[in-house]
Length: 504
Image (cartoon, rainbow, N blue to C red; front, side, top):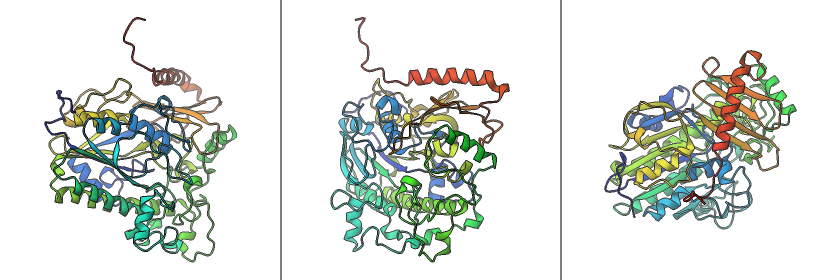
């Protein structure tokens, strides 16, 4: 039963929610927001007809803790889900926002990955997630006999995952997981015309490694025309100091010309950055290249396919007459270093390209149109916002802050004065790296706990994070002040348990 209360986004009929979440997509991959090298006309249209937040931050640069965080509205450490590869999602964890919506009368569906527990070599075990409709796909490589709906769909078309084409051609568009996501989403939305309000969570696997866009899309992006990563020679020294301290990253730092991405179009496991399988017999010269611009071109090609698939979903809303009562959300779970500072993929770092993600809302008559908002935003804010969209009170345990009012009207006050991010031994092999990031409008502080090295950047003077001021004596007072603020934020991020209702 929906709660009737004053809410700028609520109405007598709660809206449908189409929530599209990509995997490992950086914030700076949208044409309308300044990247002239990508091709994102559909996402650009969302920006023009909705509100885009340019400074939205995930709460972990790793999939599972980030998803656990934005699905509960709490920090990974508070949910006790701090890394990939976990046996299961904790039974005593707070309810997912989809469970709360389902309990309030929403018909909730999932298409694609969930990744709240390990899906390596198995279909991940479900939790009490609230999804009435379930079309599951984790990594496109997974060809399990039971439980992987994408693999079943490919088999129905007379093909087998891993045997679709020569590696150098990528996966054909009509058999791609991104295409499957759009088709499954359209089926769901078409079947629910005129019924109870619904939420559909569409979780596309791209632009996650192994960077295997269809050949037709890869041809649209010339590596020679790519801008290349953010890199200076001093980055290798910086990464070397952190590596010497034992601060883990999945790939060793390299110059942009020597990044060991191997074959970005080969369907390799993503765990080592998407290219650890050697396929020396490939004749395609593009697939043999290992430089950062080749990676960038493949990455943008995957995003172009996502944009085309998003067009199909939005057209379905129009054709079924559901556009006016559907909130569309576009975001990602975390970013990708993409060669920046000599790194590829993800790991224990907090550069903007890794922790800052797209976040766009569109809802005719409910969300302001053509707004580009540079407020500091966390993905913990998604769950409270979704509840506001539906007119449901936010549970006391949620740590996020609803964006509802800011979406509906101009708000003078800042949404947040800082954002934070966590990395606690997060990868599938124990890496013993523990770190937190705290940033406000000007400074970013990264603390590698138990280590002597850290990072401090003045983002006004150094927006691309080349000058680490951690050891700069002129910034000692600033560093100490930010350390105190970061410590306070970490203490306030803990799960305090049941609400206190009496003096004893």
